[in-house]
Image (cartoon, rainbow, N blue to C red; front, side, top):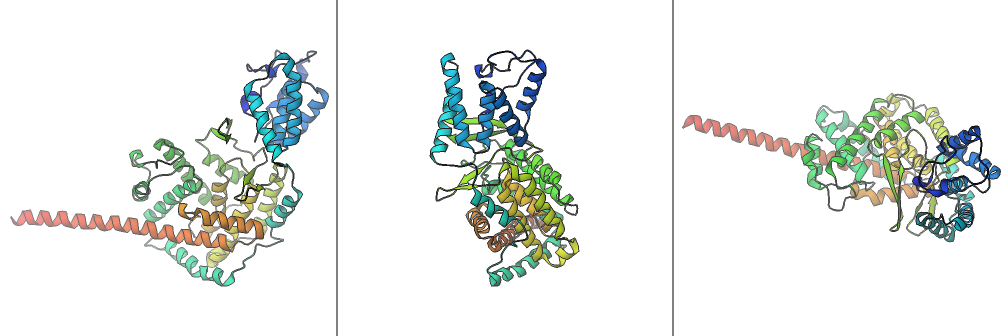
Length: 448
């Protein structure tokens, strides 16, 4: 969470901040050009840690400058430190009220921050961070509690692997599976919703015809062309994961996949209630620069990793993944191990939540890499399995038990394989029957 970016100006060489907002004015004695350039660099810096410490320094040096107060308040809000943010906003309002330069948007934002403070949302939660770090790494291995049920999945996994690499499961079937996985990846996140008939048409024909796309009336995105672009981006992200599956997993690869996913999402919409909506540029090539939480069903706030912890947590995650010595031949001979690693990766990335958006898709895509190494299809969560999937994630986060998560991965893959096999086989049978019917008609005419 942060202030709408239209408030955040930058300094030009005339010593004034750009934009029409009067909060961008500089009060008091003018500053020299060298100091203006330094302040300008601070305001343009998108690294949250550097920005935070630099703005604190500027606030101590220039305690009553509206533009610095506003930027520092926004940074505090990004870190979910609403108490300090509100203190700065109160100071800003007190400073600017005599000059009548407070507008409605700023007051609206201040009311929102007051509401967050009243609900006692805190930016730091020592108990959460201890639990978070304990769950992330192999020094506390994920649990597999229901062993009987867990090993019952082995037969399904071996079946999935045999189908995926069989000659009968041709290139067309694999491509259809990826198209269905791309649809599922977005529908599970409620990014869009298309009709079942459209899903069947895409499985049979791909994305070659825009007029095939019929968007469901409840879909957030109504434009079919936009749906096609999002699906194309998701398919490209799958290709990146598959083509690099035998290479080391790196931060750069994770960011590359994220960048592909948001290639057509230049601006992200943020809505906190019906009266307060703003737009912010979608960040790429960097981890998120604000703290995040979600509201659980029992109205508790579940925090993700602190922004200052994202990079060290990712580095530790990649180190543990590399140290596990995941040999492709070994995974192919033991596909169950591939699903254990995939569930652990997904569980860890869902806790870290490294980006400001697309975290669910990123977690499933990156977690598909060990599966692709083992000649297994990528993770595809069916829309009607979403509630079970969320419950399995919550179980993993609360008790470090990934058994249910593996079960969801396996069962959804089985359902997808059976669905596309039925759709394609039915279409091929109709084509065969149609061809035979035409041949019979030709023979009949010849006899006449």
